[in-house]
Every structure is written in C-alpha cells, then in structure tokens.
Length: 481
Image 1 (tube, rainbow, N blue to C red):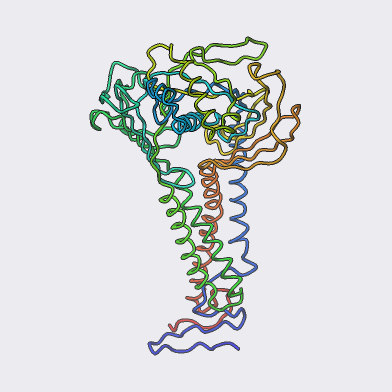
Image 2 (cartoon, rainbow, N blue to C red; image 1 turned 90 degrees about the vertical axis):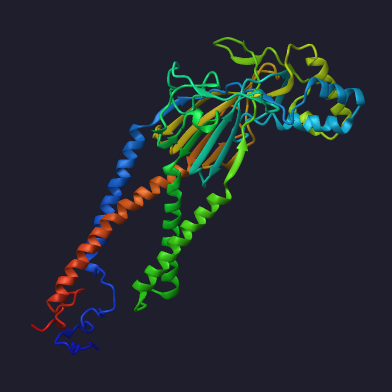
C-alpha cells in the first residue's frame, strides 16, 4: 500500500512511497532493470577495452631471451677466518672450532639458483683472498615488494673488519653511470648523478656522498609496489559487500546504506592489513663481501663452455658429502687441514673465501618476458647438462612434479617431467606488477560506472522536483507552487 504525499508544515508536499516500484524517500536511488545498460553494460565495455589494450601492450612488448648459467662469485666466509685462525684449529685439534668452520663455509656458499631448482650436487672452492668491495647495508619496508628501500655503502681499508674508513667523494671527471644497477668501478670515486631522478618506474634519491659523511647513499621509492595497499583495500571492499549480501540478504530495506558502511570498513581493514604486513616485513640486511678471483674458460664452442676459478682450490668432497658429516669433528678437522694445506702457499690473500658451482649448466634455455619493460609474467623452459668436471656429460632432470615457491614479490611455478630429454617449464609472476594491473582494470570498470550512476541519479533528482518517482517516473507527489 502506497504512502500518500503529505504536508511538512511549510507549504511543501513530501513525496511518499511509490506504489509502482516501492521506492521510499530514505532509499538510495539505483537503476532499475531497464536501466542496467547504464551501470553494467557501459562499464563492461570499458573493462573489455582495458583488457584488450593491456593484451595488445603485452603482446607488442614481449621479448624472447636466451638464458645462461653464469659463474657465481666467491664470498668472504663469515665470520672471517685468517690463515692463523685455521692453523690454530689444526694445531690444537679443536674439533668444535673445526665444526664451526665447516658451518661457516656451507653458509657462505648458498645455491647460485634463485629458487634452488638445479638438479645434482655442488662443489666448493676455497682460498685465502682479499676484497676491494665496500660494506653495503640495505633497509627495506613494504609488502609484497619493498615500497621504500635505502642502500648505503662504506669503504674501508679492511672491509672485513671495518678498519680504516675511506670516505667517498664525487669525481666529476667520470662519465655518469648507465643505469641504477651499475656500480662505480672505484667505490671511492662516485660519478656525478642527479639528486632526484626516475628510472624504470622508481623514484631515485641519490645525494652526493659529501652530504652523507662520505657514505654513498641511494634511496629507492617504488610507487608500483604501493599499489598493493589499494588492491588490499579493493579486495576487502568486495568481500565486505559479498558478506553483507549473504548476511542481510538482497531484500533488506536499508541494504544500500548498510552495504556502503560495510564496504568502507572492509576497505579500511584491507589497507591496514597490507600496511601492517609491510611494516612487519621491514628489515635491515648486509650484503656479503665478494672476494677477488680469476676465471678461466674451459671448453670451446660448439662444445660445452664453462668457467673455472684458476686461483682457487676445489675441496675433494661435494656439498652433500660435507653436509652429511658436518657434525663429525674428525671430518671437520680433516677439511680444515685440506683448506690450510691447499692455500697456505697462496699469495697475499688474508681472509678465507669460498665459492660454489652447480653440477649442471643450463642447456636449450629460453624465456619470454611479457611486457619486457614491465615484466609482469616470465615464461620459460630449460634443460640441464652435467659439467665434465662432475662426471659424464649428459642431460639431468629434476624430480618430476609441480613446485611453487615465492621470493619477495615474485612467485614461481615449475612443471618438471623427470625426463632428461624433455625441458622443465616455469612461470614467474611479479605480484607488485599484478597489483597495478588489477587496480587499472578495477578503475576501468568503476570510473565509467560512477559516471553512469551519477547521470542516473541526476535524472532522478529532476523527476523528484517534478513530483515523479525518481526511480521509475510514476507520479506520487511534488512541490506546491
């Protein structure tokens, strides 16, 4: 039953409930079924256009890449060991200290593969060496990718023990570095660079070292990674609306007002959750000190080509054998003797350094970077070929199965057949880039819909001024002239 139009005491007639569509003055105006083209079809067209534009961009900007294994760099073992330290362990037959030495060598030779996917074993090379690298510390905050990161570099006469600080200074006779990943050839001589710049979607703040106490400082601000906050808010906004529909139902008289309240709170909670994760993931890390080494090419095309460290000595055990006896004091003392006798005649190297090589190299490896400047997705395949210094040269396959792993903002999925003759396929997804794509597609839907809904409500306001139902146009009352 409809509510008749009444008088508010000031000469104006108040619009009551519409007998045709049931609209009430306190209800929020929404488009009826015949007006769905305003709020659904038009935004859907813009969404499809956005998807088509993104797909065209990804296709035109794709790049095929050839992959190779490379040679991992040698690291100074941490904590540091000198020749005198290892000699003391051997002379005193200190088994506990020898076990600590073995643990330090293993910790300083991680897998050269980002996700530890390589099949087979690994070797370990050692020598007493020096380093000309600066001490580097990094501070990061943000999730799943860092929103802000700060990198600082200290130069020392002895970087291992942080003795003899050497301040860096700007050398204007040097050419500017090609990109943000390039390091100065001489760490104490920093090429001129702008205070503020934008490279590869990142905001770089790089003050001259004279302003930072002789410490090279780089600040990276990544707006793309901050899109994760907006995506978290959108996700909880949608889930809150879905929860309201399940709890209150679609027929509740105040569903529009309450649903908006639920969604606002959900969006706030989603943004706070992502921010909380970003703060909890804040960390300060120190880069390892890399040691100097001389590489020598082994093999020549068209055969297998790889590199060896000519000034390092390979331990007679593979890594798996060392790990199996890492708590055996007699084995640890034997390893310490090998380290000492193999490197005691070396040149002026002061600190123990170690490096590792994988048993297998990449073979027939390639990848496809979707939108190479954006790198949202990377598809690839590879096979693994055993090095001749590990045994018979033949293809080796990882165990069959599907593996999923994450590292920072990157998620990797691998499909392995277990057949050496068939390649292993992988897919890498960058979560921070995916967050931007989700936000762009949501904007392509929401902005046209907001415009359409605004136009519809403006039309309803004109109907109401004429004494018509703003929802369906049925005559229910008006304003007295």
